[in-house]
Structure formats: C-alpha cells, structure tokens
Image (cartoon, rainbow, N blue to C red):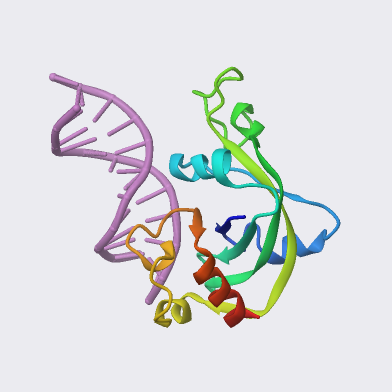
Length: 153
DNA sequence: GCCAACGTTGGC
DNA sequence: GCCAACGTTGGC
C-alpha cells in the first residue's frame, strides 16, 4: 500500500465537494503534468490512502483523507474539444493523460496548515516542504504519513 | 539536443 | 499582485 497527497483548489473542488456525495466516488481528472501522470497511471493503486490538500485558498493545508477506489484509467476529457482539459495531441490510440477515482474517508477537525507542516522537524521528505513543491500528485512515505495523520486527527 | 522565451503554479 | 521555481515550447 502506498500513500499520496493530492492537491486541489477548494474554490473549484475541495474536501466539502468530496463530502457532499459520500456514496459516490469522484474522478480526479484534469492532471496535465507528466510526472503526476506517471504516478496516476503506474503507481496509484486501489486501497492507497490520499491526503487531500487545499492550495491557493484561505486555509492552505491538508484538509482530509481519501481512499483510491479506482486506479489509473484514461482521462477522457483530453479528447473533448469542449473541455478545458482538451489536449489536441492526445489520441485514442495513444492517450496522454490518466486519472483515478477516490472516495472520502475523513474530514479532519481542522485543516492541518502548511505552516505547521513546514515547522514539523520530522517532516523532511514530503514534496510540500522540499524544493520541487509544485507537483499536484506526490508520494508520502509511510513514516511521515503516520505522523501527519496523527497530528491532523 | 540545447536553451531562451514563455507560461503556470502557488505561497505570500 | 508579486515573483520564485519550475515545466513546456519551439527555433536552430
């Protein structure tokens, strides 16, 4: 089992949107970054646990926990000219972009702020606190996942 | 394949 | 709105 952190902008789609339809799964689509794509296509597996991270908003930080319920499959928005995620270079034979479905597990009592995470001496490997912090899908190692989960709960 | 120019992300 | 830190594009 692997652990991940997915970013989202809550003004567009946040943890409350995940929560509003608890019986359904939500597609994590629109990821258009190759490194993140590789994770979604090859490494994110059913049953993996995912921190939901809110970015570009008032309360920046980890807002809750979700579980992967459908692992990597082709993101069809890449073929749709009407979609803002349309990619003219993608073809049905050679799709470029993939997505997964997740289901909400838990909303944390309060958002665990980025500031707090950065101040935690145990958290050194997490992509958020390292240089290349712009990736929208990033792995979290088990040790740091456990520490963050405990701190957030 | 190099790299300058340009675009995007995302915290502040 | 600023700007650092990337990622992507395209000419050569």
